[in-house]
Length: 189
Image (cartoon, rainbow, N blue to C red; front, side, top):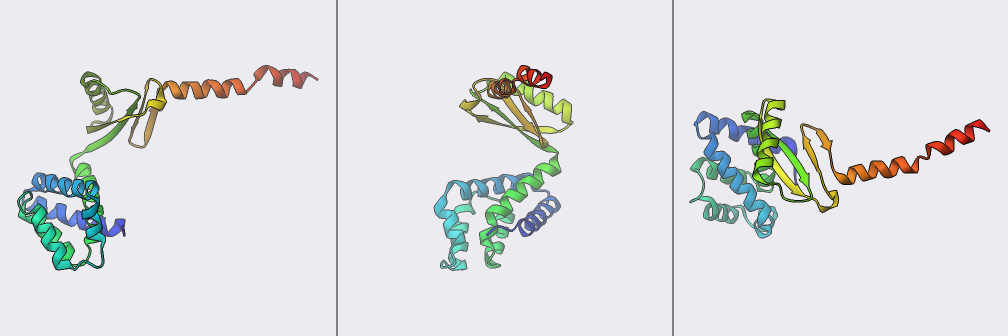
């Protein structure tokens, strides 16, 4: 069960604690790992969500997986969440933590969709252009979509710039469906 208000509060508390202890970057890396494990391992996610598995067993699994790979603050946080019987929120807390971390650091996410993989020079040009435009750090996510035929779609800050061939064809099709000459002839009669 996902509750954004609760997960946001837990994430905020963890960020504040990490900042106080001057280990924010380490905890960010840890939480990124936790989110990756949650999203890539369905058995792990099912275990966290299972009401049948006892909390102490879930704590043992969390300890086994994360003890060697994370800071002790991160592990203690995960164990505390589990003791409070809120382990079903761990994935949501991790997502909220990452979002709040990026907001705190001024990192904005941009998504570029193309029909082919972009080379590094073009990615760097896009990042530099967006940095100038937004005065922020940019995290560029590349998505391949063969349907676009050519061109690209760039999305960031709730804005979208569509320079895809697919979009141009859609606009052309719409224009051809509107027969402007036919309507002028009908008006004369």
